[in-house]
Picture 1: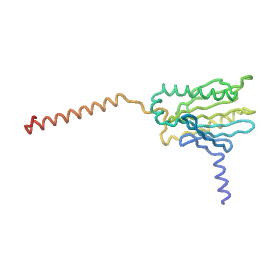
Picture 2 (picture 1 turned 90 degrees about the horizontal axis):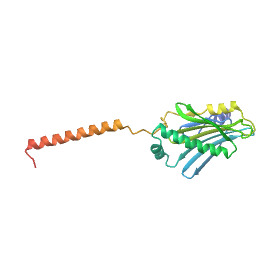
Picture 3 (picture 1 turned 180 degrees about the vertical axis):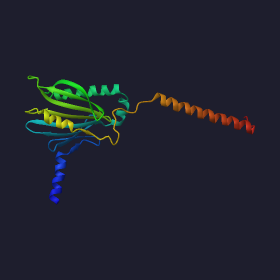
Picture 4 (picture 1 turned 90 degrees about the vertical axis):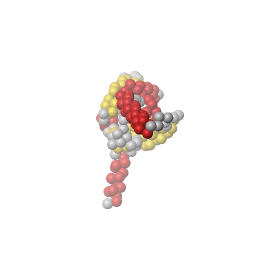
Length: 213
């Protein structure tokens, strides 16, 4: 019984979802290696699984002051798009250094979250040799990449990317709460009415007591 239970636990750790954090998880074909590092003002966690034919990588990156960064820089869709443009540029440059040449990019939707897909090609043949999925949620950059070592397997790539899961139980979001001008003006109006009411009661009290000083 203990042996069966141990096998079940091992099976879950190898073939189950690998959590990068409380939001993002993905399933690797084999048990991945884990690597953590801090570069400049960013903290990153990376999982990877490679063999002689293909490579699977998933990474999460967040600035050390990520919460402040999220609130200040992602108030609307326009700023989210700019953040993605920068994220895409960095990813393309990183992949180019590994001889994967940028081919195309497209906006995608995963669990109602906006993301981007980047495809890469071989410089000489023009054949696709890698693909990345980018997601920016709660100010955290998630990148999942499938790439060719000796063989590009479309089915394995799709299985890897289709296993991406986003835990929505804690209500993650891509945009910080926008400043609602209408709501704040309404709040200011009620505060003003309250202040006028207090002033009116004070004046009435003065007249009633005959104390006008």
